[in-house]
Length: 127
Image 1 (cartoon, helix red, strand yellow):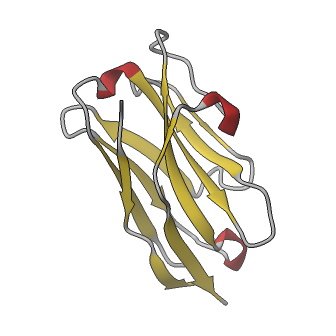
Image 2 (cartoon, one colour):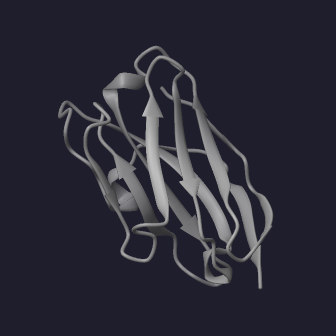
C-alpha cells in the first residue's frame, strides 16, 4: 500500500513557475512508476507526466513538453513536477499517482493504469 500526499500548488501569474511535490509512504516506493495528472473543472482527468521506477524514463503530454519536468528521489520517497512558463489553461487540480510494476523502465500514460492516487493540489494560473 502506498499513500500519496501532494503539495506545492497555489496561485501564480502566467509565465510563472511552481514546483509540485508528492510525498509517498511505504518502503517499496522504488517498485512504483509514478505519474502526474490534472483535472480542470468540467473536464476529464488528463495525463501530464510520467516517470519510470528507475527514473531513467519519462514521458509528457504534448501540452506540457518543454515546460514541465518530472523527477523522483527514491531515497526521499518523493516525486517532483517542476512547472515553468505556466499558462492559464494549466489551471487544474493536480494529482500524483503510483503504479506497481516489475518493469524498471516503463512509463504509463493512462489513469486506469495507476493503483494509488493522492487527493490533489490546486494550481491556478492568472492571466
